[in-house]
Image (cartoon, rainbow, N blue to C red; front, side):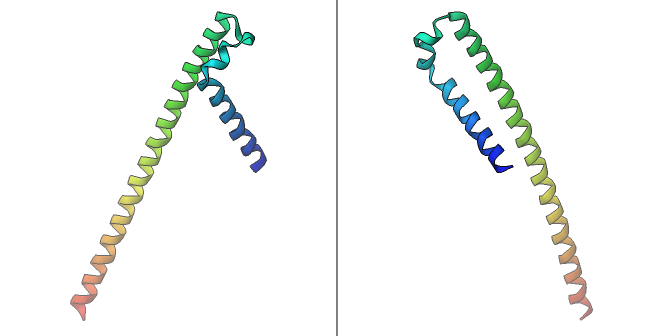
Length: 90
């Protein structure tokens, strides 16, 4: 499983390097402007989808953190109430 993840990370890294270096697309291999424009449109679509994916993940993480915070706060309040009841009894 880790080999697949490493290969996927390497593939993503290589793709991002390819997209960030615009001078690679200006070489003789990529002479056609249509090809360059299609790559750039794919680049924009990929960036937009990646940004929306990251935004959704961050929103879900934020919700989980808030739920955990509420749970811990309620637990601490219960512990404090139990502690004050025991102090009053003794």
